[in-house]
Image (cartoon, rainbow, N blue to C red; front, top):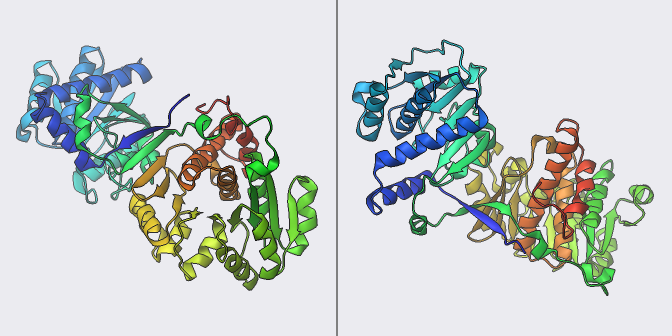
Amino acid sequence: MPQAARIPLYTAAQARELDRIAIEQHGIAGYELMSRAGQALATVIDRHWPRLQRAAVLCGAGNNGGDGLVLGRLLRQRGAQVDLLCLADPERLHGDAARAASDFRAAGGQLQPFTGGLNGEFDLLVDALLGTGLDRAVEGRYRAAIEAINLYPAPVLAVDVPSGLNADTGAVLGVAVEARRTLTFIGRKRGLYTGSGPQYAGNVEFADLEVPGEIYASQQPAVQLIDNPALELLLGPRRRDAHKGHFGHVLVIGGDAGMAGAVRLAAEAAARCGAGLVSIATRSAHAASLNCGRPELMVHAVESGAELRPLLARASVGVIGPGLGHTGWAQHLLGQALDTELPLVVDADALNLLAHQPLRRDDWILTPHPGEAARLLGCSGARIQQDRFAAAEQLLACYGGSVVLKGAGTLIAAGRGDLQVCARGNPGMSSGGMGDVLSGVLGALLAQGLSRPQAAVAGAWIHALAGDQAAAAGGERGMLAGDVIARLRGLVNPGANLTE
């Protein structure tokens, strides 16, 4: 059976330390690593742009620029025309970058100053400007170069990290290169996978530059990328003598006036993910209609906290928040749910109510989007997006349990010291009801016996992968939450293709 795969993600400082260890402790010359980086970039170009005739390579002053200089020489050797545009005085380059410039010239290349624009018809632009060392807003000539790159119609290959993107957080430092592809070296940089990282990095590829595997033991990354949560191990074949009582009872609580659809989506997602029983507690006005389209759901009219109590007593997991609203009715229902020891998935309006009366529990999963996370932490949504990793860790420290911080590059703080990134999912999931579906998925996994951390990670992965399959079937624009629900059943059963 496949094992769960987690790929380490590194900060810029950790990546530099890996580079140092490779050079100083394993005797790999810095210029040798630079040459390997240039060759890896050339291989990516051969694979994705095999008919390349003319490229512009924009180089900065450091080793990132040196990688670009090596690439420029290799492209010339392959017969391509290369415009090597320097933002630093070539005579002031030092170390390995200076040697790369010398070798480029010796091979017949000419170094040209960047004069503020891109003049020529290029098939490809290569961003070798800034690399991982940037920690402040881009200014001056480098900003002008990035803006010129983004205005030019040709695709862009970024070297290690798109210039202007914070390698640690995925935030844009004023302006950043929007690349078609990014090739990152030695250690994958965590900022490529969340926040603005996916937009600016494009398709991320990795080259270890043949460094010894033992160098990685020196660094303990705090963040990992989910590659495959091994769902066959978590959701194996069911016993032949099983019955519905073995797979839990999910109670979905919400659906105030005008928001019945939210609880319906969450409940149907829970049922499609294998919960033995699924009930809904909602407003009386919605009870009859919710049964019409999905009679398998047990719908209860609840107008007070007292009416909710017996339903909570019969459930094994509670999902609260979809369409809950902010009225006194919502507050009473949330209060009743919090008074129990029932494992909870807390979403949407329940999170907004929780922000007014913060509480810490170890048996729940919180699923905020950036706006809800901002309310929970008393800050702005922009602050959350500036450093999603820090936000997820702070949410976990304040509220406990597990946290699924939604958005591009969903973060799962499954528990203390366990922070993961789900790079699946797509912009088509930016529509109403997608979060309700996720809450139902999580509730069903908890009901079937997965631990809270297991359910948080597997649920985020299943939800995102279902979204990718739905987008592949019909496109991102116009995708509905129901399209994602339709994909869930195939992903929670052994033998389903989990990676396509």
